Length: 78
Image 1: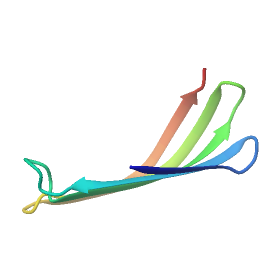
Image 2: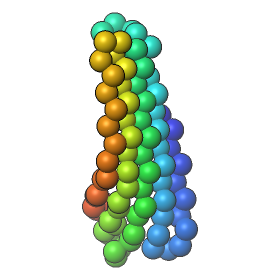
Image 3: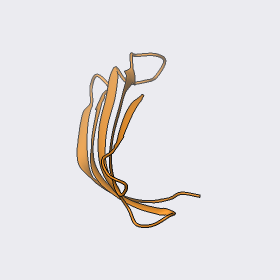
């Protein structure tokens, strides 16, 4: 897994993460990968809101699954 985060201003940040795996080990899939991107906004000292998009792909040989869609989140920093 890899993750990159950039703080653009005191209140606004971006994050991108991705992973890749599978490799037909045991009962795992042939290939699986995902990429996620978020924009974050700081509401105050302890709370952030985030919105983003995720793309997920799973290849199990006889079944290929591709999903993508929006994500919303709240983060409490303590």
